[in-house]
Image (cartoon, rainbow, N blue to C red; front, side, top):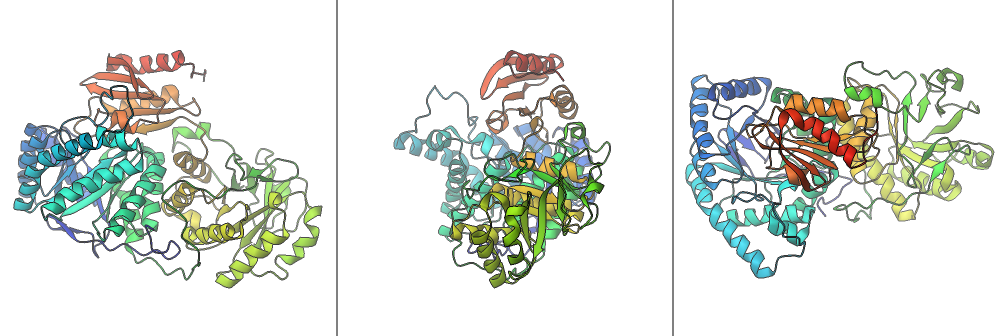
Length: 639
């Protein structure tokens, strides 16, 4: 099990790795880092951007070094930063070129290599039409070639006192790993452990590991599986967390918070990066907010459960009944569309996101004041009403949320009348006493109809509390769905709320979302549907896999991404990848419907799924060609 007890998470204490003067892992706080987007050989621009990042609170800055000339420029950048009094450690980002890595190691405190392409070959080039696994001797031959390419760098790092990040990306696994494992977390984990073995064979331990993916669920499960494998080997190396190609704006921030926060909730992670398709300075504030929240000791939830040995390394949600009111206006669980309930007082934030015009309406509304009569909500477009703490019975009501502490009076008094009400009964458990929670869950399971009953729980530690409910229901063989009910106080911290939801949605533990308050900064409607879209729980608009950009980017990323979004945002259910170069492009967009990938300066390759269908399209024509391609594939609808 990747955690000894998922109901009592503790921060995983890893070994310390020094990156220059910066300590990562052990008892150090969670560190925040980012990456420059300027051409590396433009020393003036790169230094200026690094200074801005450091001033914003970035503790480690990564700079791409695709060539030896770029790696040499790192020396000039380091000298100029020192001259200006900036001692922030630098990390060179290496793909394809061991020679660039060797040069960079002479100038900066840390090197990041990608096992999928370090030896010079893109991870997913020509598959020769077969998905069959390599024969063992071929696999081992590739392993030895990778080791020989890596050893000179490893020995130089050890000599110079540098640190290393083994940075696996789902989008750029090596051919060997893809042939053996497919596009799976198992291939990601084996890639990391293979290079970690090389390090340990040389007695080199200044290593940090990462397992990034643009799919939040894949990212979460990959880190969990890695930690599981490390625990079995009795190894503890620091973890760098991030959702790669998360996109921009509030959507990218919330998607990053879901993935990063879900792992921090379990005590995993020593350094983080929020990757946005925005100026890198914008990454620092949300990253620092997450780091500060989870650098504090995780509280003792005082919740335990004797049977928590379920496999949490793969997608395995508990089956649930389809649950709804008698009128069929509100449904949850059993494969129903993931419903959202908002406060009638919730307000959109104008201009915050271009998605606002496409957001669905909430599926039901809470009255402005708990206990208020239903008519006050009918101003919200005639949508059904969910009553909270009210005995009012009206035809417009689809769900009644009943706070409960104990069985007697709180719950048992409802049993005789359950057949006389038309709405769903949602029992919202407010006690924190474990025996009472168990008694309530058992009583509700035994006395109320599965197709008309929902559970939720009130807790300042919602991930642990909902895990407890789910495990209790698993033990009973119950198929009652769970509603995530966020009170007004929880709605004041959107990043913490997104982190909690990221964990619970990744495991399929919740089946509807209720926000009692208006979510700060984002607005409840944008928050709810953006988080569900990011988790793949409810799709309402085109999803974009968009890289944050760096010195390797082969076209103007921000403006191009905006033009693509402007042209395609109305296409519900599509996934479009916008990738600055081929390093992660063809792989990270493996589950995208269409791809727009930089192939040379000002030149674009267009993809349908994994297949290149147009090569070297001039950038000024490429957006129109992408639209034409979507039309040709029969996926276009008029706005």
